[in-house]
Image 1 (cartoon, helix red, strand yellow):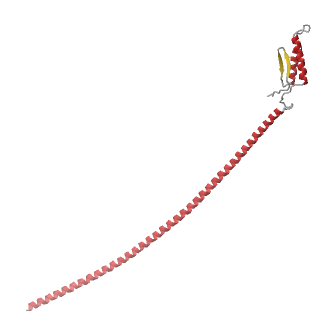
Image 2 (image 1 turned 30 degrees about the vertical axis):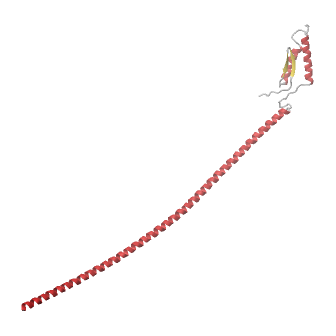
Image 3 (image 1 turned 135 degrees about the horizontal axis):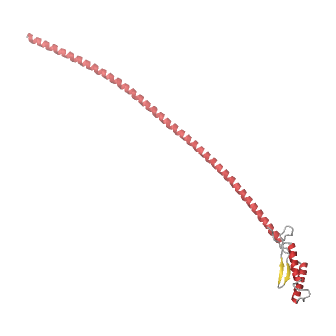
Amino acid sequence: MRRMALKKLKVIPKEGYLLLLDFDDEDDDIKVSEEALSEVKSPAFDKNENISPQAEADEDMGDEVDSMLDKSEVNYPAIGKDENISPQVKGNEDMGHEVGSMLDKSGDDIYKTLHIKRKWMETYVKESFKGSNQKLERFCKTNERERKNINNKFCEQYISTFQKSDMDVQKFNEEKEKSVNSCQKEQQALKLSKCSQNQTLEAVKEMHEKSMEVLMNLGTKN
């Protein structure tokens, strides 16, 4: 896009108004100004005709203005690669460069800050997972030790209980054997006592029979 620049301002009097020329191209300035001045200096009537006082005054005014502008032309700020830059435009350009550099710097700072925060988050997440895994391992190991202790304790209790039960069963069997032996002995004693009683009864019966026979024999004899 072509950039417009204000270089010089020319004032050319016309009939009833002033023509202001303002171009960034010097060739266009010269061409248009020559055409305008030719119209002013040579109006549309013949040389033989009388020039009106108003036209003559306008021509004199145009000459005076041209001479004044040639001596001291009004310079305006120009923006171009080959022209001198005014302090205001230069300040604006410097400010633009400063703003651009500030934006670039702030963008770099934001990127660095985000990069640092990302690294910090990655480190934090890794450390958190590492700490959680360590806690879980310690918890599992602690629970495993506790489970082993509890299992060992109950196993000892079960073993002692079963051993005591075995001892009780053994004692019961021994007592049972003893009782069986005593019963057998009692049965033998009962048998012996019964046999002795039977023998006694038989002896008494025999004695009774003999006594009765003796008495009967005595009765018959008498």
